[in-house]
Length: 359
Image (tube, rainbow, N blue to C red):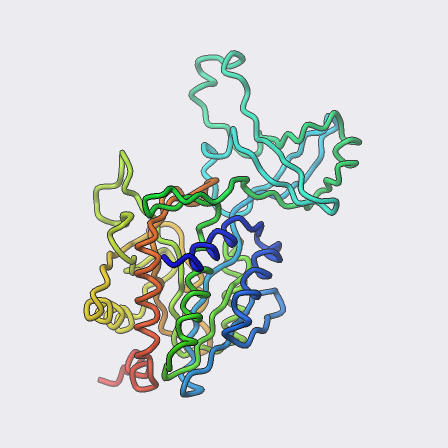
């Protein structure tokens, strides 16, 4: 991973950006994309970076979502605690005992989802999972008046708190790698394409509100009207103790993940086979992933207009939808290299071949 790519990923990972509150991430992407592409926005805030090659068409869409899972304050209690609703898929067990950043009109406030001390729990209570509706954010306020004076209001978003860390062995730990790693991939691919020709026009897109229902995927697909789409998205890694044994999920350091299917997308078979062939020719290791639960922006993009051949690829990451994830820089590099090699081959004839259904 180049120092520039690593620095970009760090900046994106550390940025604050819940669904509908992606301003900081969007600003980071804009700063890196404007030197290599023409930048515009849809009306929900997705950023669209157009990089013209030697032809106007086909239009190749390369999306990654900017948002992260988090919380939104719904109430301040009389004694100064914050009740909240979740945004995105959370497993309640990972939410207690964690720090959060609440973004208010007066600035950021640090909060904590404090568990009750074990001394106060019965043996039966210790076995129970605490649900989000029974949790509160503690900002140290003495009462509601003090919480209001700190700037907190219902509707304020709260993101996981934690800084990006290079673990020193090619492994990286960071907040919101789902899908800031994909955002970094989009930036790095467009940087590399700026140095060579490609027989198409590429649209690198940072989409909004993926974690709240794939919202920006739909609006940005309308803006781009792609002929083909390859979603840059983190894959679910399960190479930990107690892992699933059926081969459905991916492992760190074993290569780029290609989607076979998820809960909303069965990728275009010809596109997937084409990408796999390019990976083989380029010596890029790949692995395959299936997800019975969860999907990506590709679910909405594939249904744009008369249909868009769509696939998602990306590096695996452990512990997604929690406060931090771990990924391998080699998998990121492989994904970027594969996307560049694929895009260089996506001329009109090749893209048309993905949708030739005449017997």
